[in-house]
Image (cartoon, rainbow, N blue to C red; front, side, top):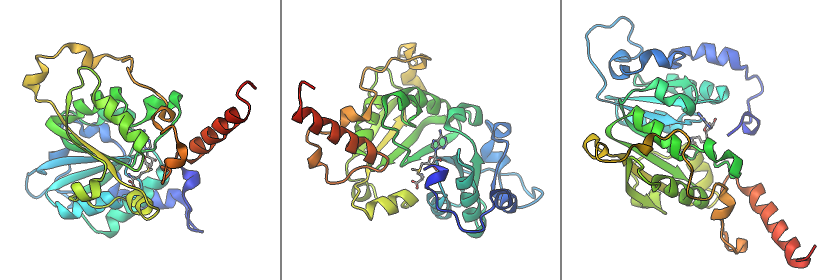
Amino acid sequence: MHALHLRLPKHFVLEERLEHYARAIEPTPRSWRGCWAEACYPLGAGPRSAPGRFKRVHVDLGCGKGSFLVEAAQHAPDVLFVGIDNEPICIAYAAQAICEAPISNAVVVPGSANHIKAYFDHEVSSIYLNFPTPLPKARDAADRLTYYNRLLDYHEALREQGRIVFKTDSLPLWHWSLDQFRQPNCPFDILWASKDTRHEHPGDPETGYERKLTAKGACVYGICAQAKPYSALSHMPQPYAHPKYELNCHRSLVDYLPDDLSSLGYIPHGMEATVTNLANYRAKNRESPHA
Ligand SMILES: C[S@@+](CC[C@H](N)C(=O)[O-])C[C@H]1O[C@@H](n2cnc3c(N)ncnc32)[C@H](O)[C@@H]1O
């Protein structure tokens, strides 16, 4: 979701919104690395009356306008939910949703997935990747939130046997993401991979994009993976920390599209232009194969 795609209300002034809902925004996430569960407990209660801690910390990476974050936090008041998004407009909306809920176990961080290791240190129980931007082009593969090297970063943010829960409307992105989890020495075990997550794993609240896209006929594809226990990692070769990992799979999501594009009943969000261009290209090549 880019700012351009967001329809803003007439008198939306970003700075005013960010200031108004500042109590739900955490501008210095690096200062809480390693101690989120204690440092944020209890949120918004003024001076601390009694020491304590949240039972768990969950992260919603690319939280958008925060509807999943807020609903999940309402269901689990003893868990701290941290939403992260790199789009300030989304941060303003998510902070507003938290303040209006009102809940005292959720915050949003204006930040990037690129810095997750700098924000958290082996303390997160679950990282949610809900409907991340698919970025179909090969050159953008490393920016997809399920890129192999990012999985390694998430591993460092997660507690032992912490989980990644990924959902998407894009079958190509789902297949590509499975390939990432299956790279040699990946420090995660796939617990489940589903082509119908809503029915097979109905526990989580719907996300904003999920609601919007399923209304247009999308299926929800999902993967849940668990960080391997530390004892298993000590028996694995080190390349799971390789900084420049060479993927042994395709980089473009075009390679994960079916040969017969007309068989696509639903075109995934963010891949409309790719599918149209590919269909045109193939039609042109059929007309003049030697052109
Ligand atoms: C398609 S929206 C999905 C929003 C929400 N998770 C949902 O399911 O409704 C993707 C979100 O990820 C955010 N995003 C994309 N890349 C990011 C990154 N590297 N770090 C943090 N947020 C990112 C975008 O700003 C956008 O809000």
